Length: 103
Image (cartoon, rainbow, N blue to C red):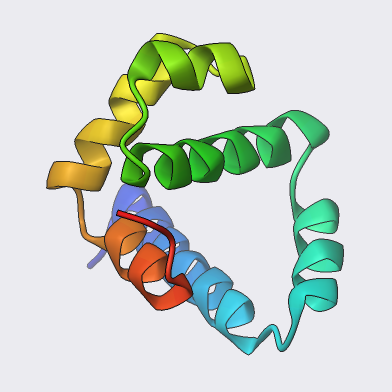
């Protein structure tokens, strides 16, 4: 029999999969804008926007300091994004390549 932690972990895995399905179902930028503004707090949404901006600038070859000066994103966050861009799960790379962001 499953204990409470196993049941909760399973429910969270299902919720995570459902969230990803919801994102995949979005059909255009306007739908994404509405969904993410409903889903996230302003600070959470800004964090996503900041990280994506960093991905694009890193792929253009900008230095961490230059990115910090241009965006205001901390050098620590730039480094974290750079680490996942290089050695993460491949999500940043895949989307950046699909969108044709510079490298």
